Structures are given as structure tokens and as C-alpha cells.
Length: 140
Image (cartoon, rainbow, N blue to C red; front, side, top):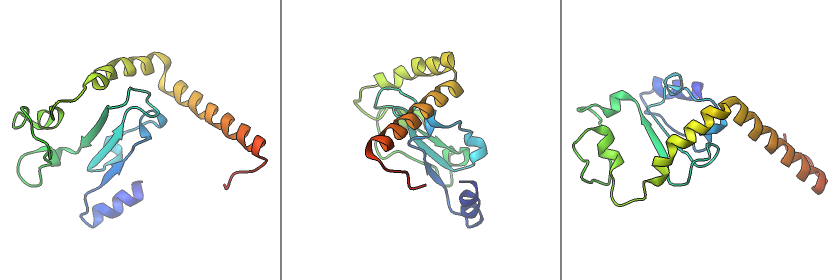
């Protein structure tokens, strides 16, 4: 992604990265990535209950003035700061968000590298099993 983000920077184009599978699948450093926006859900490789996601926004887009990012849905949190503008967006089930702390504690207890290695190895074994059953190969 780095070359593509650099190309966009040179042309003054804001960058949004859709990292739907990134959490849990890879180690993330959003500061080093240097995108303006990064979105991801937490239920795929991170294994949190469905309904929890995040939007990371570079500081310049959170500040007042200029091109401040605003939500389309407003609720009682509107005007109470950037986080409140986005987090209280109506009548939703917040239990997946509340479960996130337990999910992160589980990842910390297991170890992120260990969990990623396990998932990668399990996937590789499943791919090999299916290739053998189907009598085929991979494209790459």
C-alpha cells in the first residue's frame, strides 16, 4: 500500500483504506501506514461478535475547520466532540462493542503472533486438503 498512498499524497488525494480483513490477520501500524482514513470490522480474523467495527481518522480530518469529517446520522452525541459525534448514532445493540475488551484480552493472553500463526497454518492445511480431494492446484 505504501507506494499507492505516496502517489495519492503527491497528488493531494485523501486516502481511505478498507482493511476489512486486516484486524487479527496482520500486525497494523496505522501511523506508519499514513492513510487519512482506515476502516475495518472486528468480527472476521479478530473474532469479536458481529456488529463492531472502527473508523480511524487522521487528526487533520477530526479537527474543526477545513475538511472536518462528520457523520450522516446525528444523535444526542452530536456536538460533544469527534468520538461522540460518531459513537452514539441511534438505537443499536452495543454489546459487540462492549465485548471488544474481552476479545482484546483474549488476544493478549494467547499472543497475537501465535494466534495469527495458528489461523494461517489451519487455512493452509484446509487448502491442501481441498486441493488433494479435488485433484487440482492453486493458480499461484
